[in-house]
Length: 224
Image 1 (cartoon, rainbow, N blue to C red):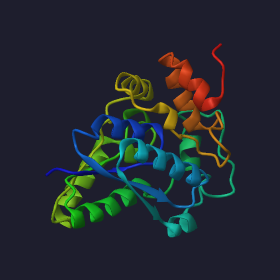
Image 2 (image 1 turned 135 degrees about the vertical axis):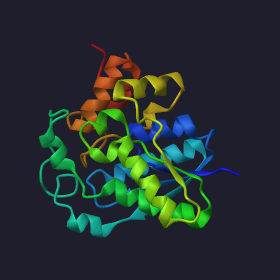
Image 3 (image 1 turned 120 degrees about the horizontal axis):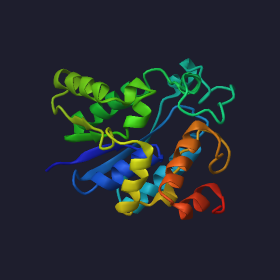
Image 4 (image 1 turned 180 degrees about the vertical axis):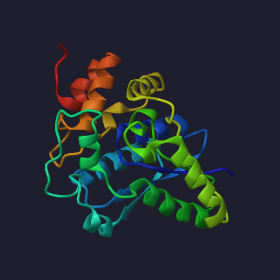
């Protein structure tokens, strides 16, 4: 019987990927990685709520060494840029070395030992324009690797690979994905800061889709 794993950060892309494919691909397990990121506790709590909502198992994996070798602002004392959207400066600031490659290889090991057929990741077109590990080419390279490094040969699937954030929110609304559970902020503050790049992307997509209810719930803003 087909069964699947999802990499779940609690953010928009992984939440919507789960909502779209949970039943079709029989997603049984969600993995959240704690590598010392500033938003780590928020991501874990959001992921727990999402897993409870969808009634799937949740596993947290700590990667302390990644924190030790990462110098970017997601884990260090460096300030995360605000009000910078789709810029190389912002991308460089939040880049974590080989993060998606590492995450997928760990998931590949779990899949190989537990006969999971698929591994879902929230890679998408919009972030793929900035981050190369969010592209179809990257997904294909990992799948080619798994042909040699695993017995089960699980396939990595990115349901949102051809969608930008506006499209992703539209899909979430159309398919009744619980956007109130999302946590997309890079910062360590309570809730969403509303100004980091991840918050900015989410807020713009909600505004584009006239999802004012969720803007108020997520960012505490009133409809203008």
